[in-house]
Length: 166
Image (cartoon, rainbow, N blue to C red):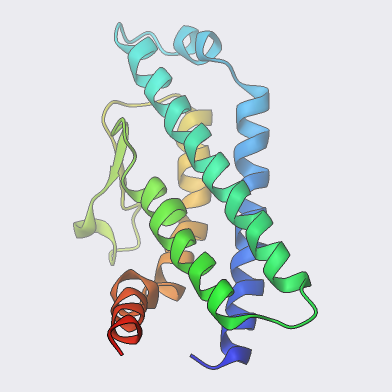
């Protein structure tokens, strides 16, 4: 991929990560497990919200690390294409996958709803409004990142393997 495209993609990815980080930090700083479990009268609420908080914290850490790495790549006097491509690969495989395939499976993407204009995210049990909102608010950000970085799902590693064989 040409250097200018990688640089522009790095800049837009960094901006989107910053936006997601802002939403995640605000939610995690304002809410507690006991608060959400108390709002939700479901007997399994503690387990559900503990899993959700764990997944969101992991997503926040992955996003912050990628955001910082992209910042380093963009601040270098000579933009290094390979370094940036490696970071974009990590963004796809750590951040995007952490969002769409959370470890605790408190929510998941239902592809049948992806093109209907409805929310494609389905929750394991009905969450309180604030928990639902954070997951759905960042959904658009990670959908855009997934679309923009889909090249890095397979093609990037295939390209790296071919170069290694030469």
